[in-house]
Length: 370
Ligand code: ACO
Image 1 (cartoon, protein in one colour):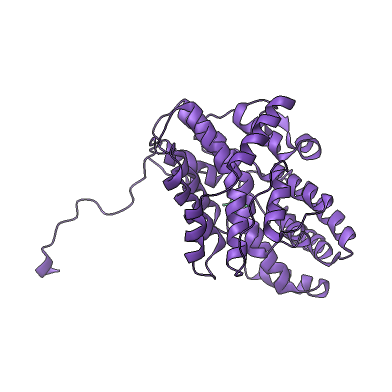
Image 2 (cartoon, protein in one colour):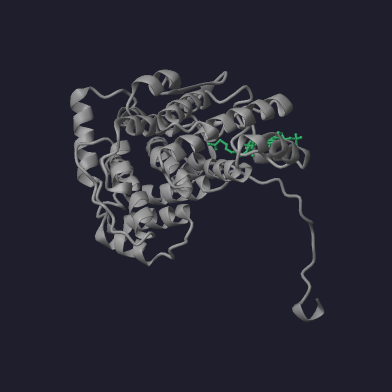
């Protein structure tokens, strides 16, 4: 038995949710470029869960359920108030999502209907948790979710208490569409491994949040912003990147395990970053980002991934830097739950083998003789 490092190139599951074929990403066979331009995030979530785009009635029913379940239990709000104010935002999200299960009377119901409903509840409640956490740590009261508005609109509203402008809502909605699913990425795999033991959907999503937190996965969007802040201005870009590459420091937001010729989602975020820069009259971050791209692509042949331009987009939307990765989770929970439902549908325990490289036939030495 020989191990494949990082499971690179290993096909570990069959799925009909999203595909990456020859560098083209589709959700249920629909090209991401088309969805990014035309679909709302709610339509995309429905598409991922049910395998087809919703008609008007189906979309209205989904909106009604999202409205119904967006509020989080008071007990969860009270426990968020007990978290240390400077706690990591993904650690807070992981804990809060795990605790949702305690207050959901159907958390242990493994029927398809119950699991489909729990997927909607999780989708409805993650944005509320992130916004509530962001306010509570600032000593503010959380804002109750609004009814009849999109998840993007509601999230921005719950964060600030103000009605967001339509450009901001559209930009966040498109970012949510672009992050919704991505085949067997690390967090989705973590979710599938967890529920393949027939554990519940909350356990699967909690595992996934833990996997997304790392800087090699979802944590990269925040790390991109840290880098942009460290660079500070356009004049410093070349020296910073040259120095980083010379010292073999990874440039966050570049490279991808699957896409070697560029991530198809990046161009949409780049366009959005430019539009928002023009709108806010501040193109500094956008221009720094394009300069970095030119250098990193020119010198290393590495292309930006979905995280790179997300950083300048979210900053233009005035979202605090440490909420970038939780927003990724707000979107990806649609994909995680779709994969969890698919795993349950045709389940087999996921239990690979390890190539043993330790000593063999070692003797047991009694404790007093060691
Ligand atoms: N900056 C500089 N060099 C890089 C980068 C980077 N961002 N990414 C890859 N490389 C180099 C590696 O150092 C390695 O070079 P070497 O062969 O000389 O040692 C080579 O390219 C291959 O890279 P690996 O890390 O082996 O590629 P892998 O497929 O394991 O990693 C990953 C993919 C983790 C995304 C990597 O490119 C990376 O760390 N990027 C930065 C973090 C990031 O942006 N993560 C977000 C990914 S997208 C997502 O999760 C939403």
